[in-house]
Image 1 (spheres, one colour):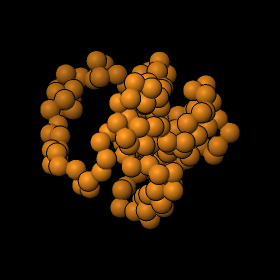
Image 2 (cartoon, rainbow, N blue to C red; image 1 turned 30 degrees about the vertical axis):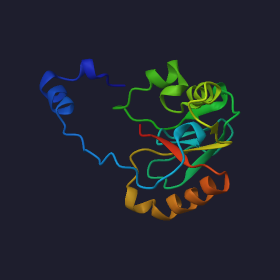
Image 3 (spheres, rainbow, N blue to C red; image 1 turned 135 degrees about the vertical axis):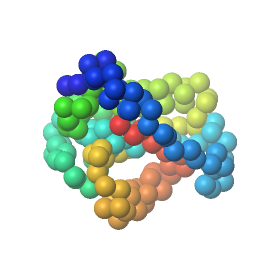
Length: 153
């Protein structure tokens, strides 16, 4: 595993100097205040339950993670020599912040936490995932989710 501190300085400067996109801050759709919203997590960390089929590079599908799944039962099959997994290993909330959402719901900051959450395999070409994204949207609507926390890894 490569850590940023171990990357040669010139390459590190290129990585740290990459331009990030900017996005309009206006919501795409109107909705209730955050304190009334039902929130789900969609991650690209290649997460799945221990007994689910692991992700393979290029997989375009997703895995369903019930909100009551114990952290010890969630596996990350996203692997790369360029990917540092130590943050996830120390705290699953880095890649799947369900515990933080539960705290927010308890504090009244959000309405509720969805029953189901989802993970895709990172580094998959988005144009191949459109049909899967529409399928996932139907599941989110069925669960009455009206806010999604996207966690790109």
